[in-house]
Amino acid sequence: MDYKTSEVLGFIEENDIKFIRLAFCDIFGNQKNITIMPTELKRAFEEGVSFDASAVTGFMNVEESDLLLIPEASTMYLLPWRMQHGRVVRFFCNIKHPDGRNFEGDCRNILKQVIKESRDKGFVCKIGCESEFYLFEQDEFGNPTMIPYDRGTYCDIYPSDRCENIRRDICLSLEEMGIKTTSSHHEQGPGQNEIDFRFDEVMPCADNLMTFRNVVDMVALSSGLKANFHPKPLQQQPGNGLHINLSLFRNGENLFAQEQGRYMEAFLSGILRRIREITLFLNPETESYLRLGEDKAPKYICYSRSNRSALIRIPAANEHRTRIEVRSPDPSCNPYLALTLLIAAGMEGIEDGLTAKEFHGNVYLHHEGLQELPSSLQEALQLAQNSSFTKRVLGEELLQCFLNAKIKQLRM
Image (tube, rainbow, N blue to C red):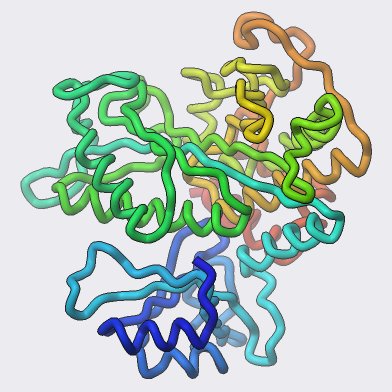
């Protein structure tokens, strides 16, 4: 939805809105928020709302801890699981220093910069995501267990698929918020599900992924269950992937379907060239590397058409929906940083006129001569640390904060 500030203030007054959530995320993609009263919203738009940034991992030191949240009017969502009386509205926020400068660790702003650079060159990137998650039972005290909610497998129906009503409620809640899904089904693992989103422009897509996680958590809890987005929650079962579909438009025309796929090949070649350097941000957890190379999760760096063993797949589609699907990311990533790096790598591929040879056959059986993705978090960290590309795109300050946190994680 594309609200203006004046429209938002009128909506709040006319619709019995009692609480305003100002949402942002840390550099790891964990959503945070501050709640204000409706009477404070006008001031928040004009001046911002201060918070202690030293309490957010990877943000600021205690001696320079003040940052401001500035709500973005166009991101207003009415939370659907709240009562009609005392309803709650949520905004995503821009983060700024008290002197008005953009905060270097604001992941949404970093993504905005890459979007602007693409638009300045005449390109509009559109993205659709497919996110997987598990549903686990809770124990008698309400604590999450590792017991799957059902024993269903891929595309099963009830009663094997006990999750269908929960997926339905998730999709209906998202629809109430103006977020459009295209399909949902049971995945391969017991209690594992997938929900796919209609493609959209980049920033709404990233914001919708943040909202999606929250909605899934809330709907699962209301059913006495716990949602799990971890890359590999069950050792002997498939991991959770976040497949990212990208296409590039100019003047409403899908460039990936034009000129014999020249733009598409250059874009995906840029991603393939940088994929090892940016894997830390697509697969940021230790268990991320237990997923890669298993159960159709990619391990070898190549692209192919309609081939789910390749890292980048070109799905069969009509001309307007021609796209590439990057299959390595998982839902533990920060979507703002993941999309920033994928788009920047793709655009670099176009600028450099890159090409790549299409792979034919089952990559898992025939991968001689292909490079591999990092095999561990430590290897991915070293590649990111030595990458001039990640430093240029993300900025040295944010990159170093992210690396420091991951180094600390590995030492624990």
